View 1 (tube, rainbow, N blue to C red):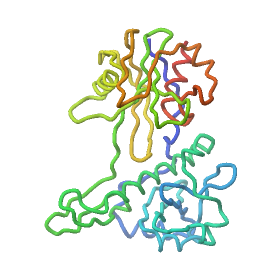
View 2 (cartoon, one colour; view 1 turned 180 degrees about the vertical axis):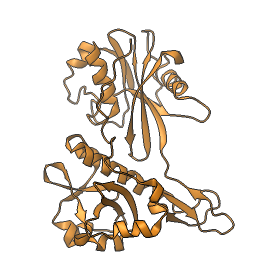
View 3 (tube, rainbow, N blue to C red; view 1 turned 90 degrees about the vertical axis):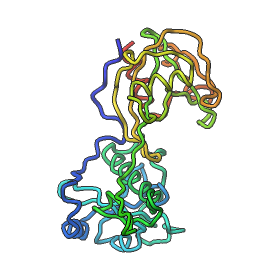
View 4 (cartoon, rainbow, N blue to C red; view 1 turned 90 degrees about the horizontal axis):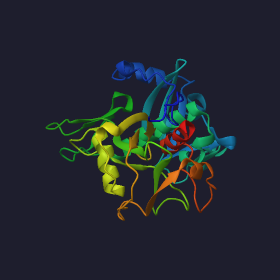
Length: 310
């Protein structure tokens, strides 16, 4: 039997905003919203967020930081929270944002992954959402069809080619990736390690979905490629998903049952992989010799839920 799903959402899911997609094309309406003095400004600088002490997100108000909208490379309407608009602004072109007097006294720009595990969940979800949109805009300044410049439309949720002969519309990109805990139906599961990870860290297997395959087929293919374990698609069970804008993925979590057997690790994929028992994982020293996946990841959620079932 596959592990029971926990009802709690994964980190960075559950954005507490009404995205009002049906109103994004109404430029007059959106301009009125984001011109409100109470509009919350969410600054993003080179994929980092403004974080105060105790890992608290800094929310600026338009009345105090309206100049950031004017100097931003791009700005994107995120949605409404209790009728208060939220606006992401990309300040990545600034060399020293800390020189701005408003930003300087608020906190420091940090990578969300460094503080996400201890942040308020709703706040970290908004920051992840903003990060994903900002990254997409930064990578789609030119049309993928004809190469002409593109411009932001629909409150920052699409870009359009400026070439009159093309006019292609491009939408924010999210790359689907499967992530799976392989288990033997009993007390053992598979964890692997990539050489670029922090010392000691081990995690579940994962990979991107390829064209022309289902999610279950992607799970089975990745397991076979990475550790040479055959898995039947009927033994692949969905668990949950997680936004992972580092830089632009949606992680689709699964459990996959495989017969216990030797692992043949693909050296171009993993540094090592092995079977571990529940007792071994519960006794993890969490140091540079062995540690479980980072606590804000769906990989850790998969491991924790599997451990809870044993």
